Image 1 (cartoon, rainbow, N blue to C red):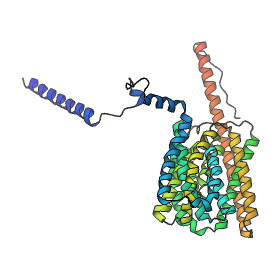
Image 2: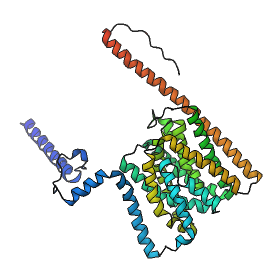
Image 3: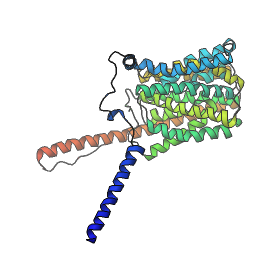
Image 4: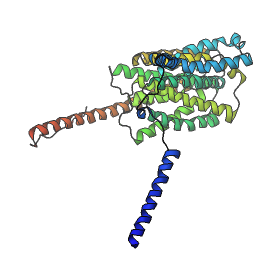
Amino acid sequence: MANDFNMEINSNKVETVSKCKGSCLKYVWQGQKHKADQNEETPQIPNGILIKVDNFCKNNKRLMSILIPALTVLFLWVVYGIKKNIWGLFVDNYFMSVTMVFGALFAGFTGQASAAIAFPVMTLVFNIPPPVARDVAVMIQSGGMSASTFTIFYMGVTVEYYSIICCSIGGIFGVIFGLEYVDEHIAPDQTKFAFVSIWFAYAFALFMLNCKVKNRKTFSRVPLMNAWKLGVFVITGFIGGMFTSLTASGMGITHFSVLTLMFRVSENTAAPTSVVLLAGSSIFTFFWRLVMQGNISKGAWEYFLVSIEIVVLFAPLGSLLGSFLNRLVCACVIYILAIVGFIGAYAIVPLTPSLIGLSVGLTVGGFLFFLVLMYVGSKLLNNINILEKVEEQRKNSAGILKETNGKSLPKIEVTTM
């Protein structure tokens, strides 16, 4: 009798708990709706305007990937321009608009920052102080690279997510360290030569790699990702963030070089990945300069207002074009721009023994560093080839074993490549 009474109480408790759990799941934690979970479509009028708009967006996905971010920023820019009457700024600053057409296209299809063109042009050709040029570049990239990032995700272009996350973590600390402790100790001419020298060293290393290995093997993602590779990306992000705080484009060079030279990722993947990473690093650098330091000059804002409308249109267009180009085309553009910038620095900036020594030291040191990346990359590629060969032999052995019904097999020997 007592046992029956206890069983009834336990049954009531279970029933009460089940009802509470069911109510919570129904009203508090119902869950999210996903496309895969939708078994039936919402009824629509067969020839309604929404169906026509939906079909247009699906049939013109590439066009929409460019227009959506561009029109959004252009609308805000026009509204601000009408209120503040900024149109007179184009009279004296039109050269920045023209410069950023090429800078935005280059940034889009190579994955490098638009500052790779804008920074040397502003500092060497128009003699804009490097800190102002840096501020202009990160402000513009915050808009242009964000627009390109939207295009990349909207089109489903392949990117390396692990490198984006780890480099962003390191990049935050690198930007802070560079802005707070390094920037004030670097002279303007030193910044100019540091930028063109490292850029030239990277381009030369990439040229040697493509010439040395014809039809070299590349990957769409970093192969065999593990903990130490994630650590490499964190360090890469810190170094890139520090250079970004000086020239607005260091993150692109360091990240792109590690992906292509060390991990042999294809330029078609490395470029959009660098675009996404540059968008984040530029936004953070812009935030730190505007909010934490609060000393962005009036001239930088004027250059920004005559350039942002150009960048948000041409940067996504460049990303779209870059996804169709062969990786060697992107590499050739990098070669040409690096050579032009390097020669231009020597032709325009008054030379001193210290500047020449700095340039030669950074060029040689950067070249040796990139050679080390290439060497490590070749070793990693050999290990991958060995693993692939072992896996292929294992599969072949499994097939032979199945055919011989368990008979003994000869020992498999693996030779290094």
